[in-house]
Image 1: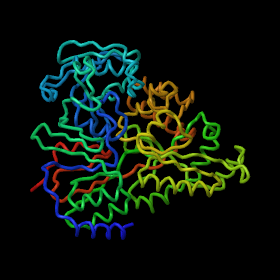
Image 2 (image 1 turned 60 degrees about the vertical axis):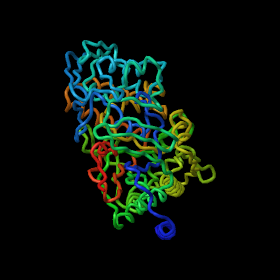
Image 3 (image 1 turned 90 degrees about the vertical axis):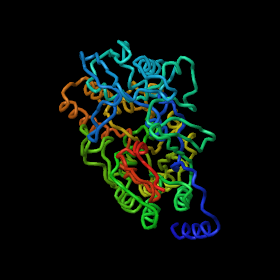
Image 4 (image 1 turned 60 degrees about the horizontal axis):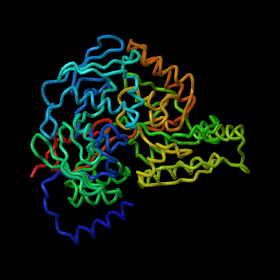
Length: 491
């Protein structure tokens, strides 16, 4: 692949003049956001760009603990929180001031069942919201929730926009460090930095080789992740290109449909887990740029845990399949859904081969991102691979695994239902002592490893490649784009 890329690059560079400098910083993406209304966004690209467009009440520090962003808070009672909006940084991009009523309207909209917000499940314990004054509002809950501030991360939209039904999906209006300029076509989104007017263009380039060629050619300035490791290594040796890497916290997993006659069997799910050689994939495919996961939260998280993961054991996998009623004459057949990204297809075919060695016949079906993600949200799958991106708060367990979080109330897309899991989630949410709460979450993660609604795979490393005149960009563990608020392009 590297030889082919080098030949293509040689012909391409020889036949073209340098493109004119547009003045914009150009960021190449594998997928563009599905929409830019933070009340609805759930895909990684939308979440990352919405962080640039919208301010939020609460953010997180390096230890994944909630910290004040747009507002600080006080816990007035176990079920009563008061938020105080900061004085600065509260101007919507249309010139109106962000006030408590806008915060209330945003969260009331999320809580309206008619809105069908994917954030509803995590916030439905909010009983009522009261605006005290333009700078202060109260949230009353239907039960104590010590982690409640960590859930207040939805970008704030203007109350007037909600009342008028403005199409924020495609014409966002927030108060973040960037304002919306234009979305002239599906694969090109234009923003401008509020502080200095610096333009930023997100350009969709599906093919990873083409993204690399565009970077080398100077047609884009920056790209992040979504490249095969050999391409990022190859870029690292080029003049005029800078490459940076760091450990990541985004959790990759295989998910199962629990209502399916085959994947709903624990013996089948454990056999699949025992057939996977994660060490080989991390070494040969990721070239070491990933670390094995045994639970959704990374070990450095305040509620994280290091568990003994499930290692490859083909004899045990075959024995479990036999107990589940499968044999060489009656093999287990599974359909594995993934996106059309070439690297994800490559991973899927490797997993397909590894599972075949245990006697599991896998059909890989790849789809464009919109179709694929739509199927996953609708529960139309047996087996699929995805990653949880940007997870900070352990309330993700309620959102993804509680039996009351079936879509659209949450993201329990595999329809997992386990009484002990529900009890542990509920107990953790009611615990006020952080140390005891962390211990409950560790027990919960052990339970999930036993029941396997997901197979933990790895935490993928973060990396970016940029032209060497791009200054000030740095990587976040979750892959967010926040550093674009400071980045400059030197002339």
